Image (cartoon, rainbow, N blue to C red; front, side):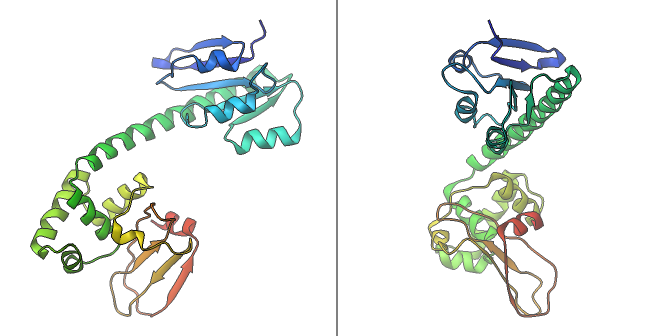
Length: 251
């Protein structure tokens, strides 16, 4: 049997491999919750290697290393754009494959750590009441306590209570921590107040003279939420447009 597909797992520092002959065989296997990678031949019988890559595109914890008897530029580019970490044309040296596998396993380990952290944050988010979540989204959008109180029809003291509960439940020690947490959880559903922001996909930073706070809104498509950022004291009055990627890097 030709080794069309090889899944390499690295649980508890022990390396285990499974050699398969078709994409269908692989898709029938249970998912591995340990650092792993997939050695995938482009020319699979039946479902191609590129097709299988699309089928498992949600498995960000399983980097793919492609191998091919002969590689053409179009196939290589397509595989790499779809997320492959390496594309090796046969014959290749053993040390090249070992290095590629080592890098892929490290990527998988990092992805698993990231997902574990997100899982904890999602649990914290799920613990918020509907009202607390509304308050959190408005706070992250730059609304002051009195504005939130007026918007939601509650007292400012009640807003402060909800805000305190949000900080405690989300494990945020400061407003900046809350912004970072919201950024990691992006995309988040927005409140009705925020769905009105179905404007073009750009970033508007409104600066008030003498204000210690500026609000920067990355306006995403309706249904997605991107938090604002906080800067230091600014004394000029202007409106600046930035690419969303710039805002994400700044936040």
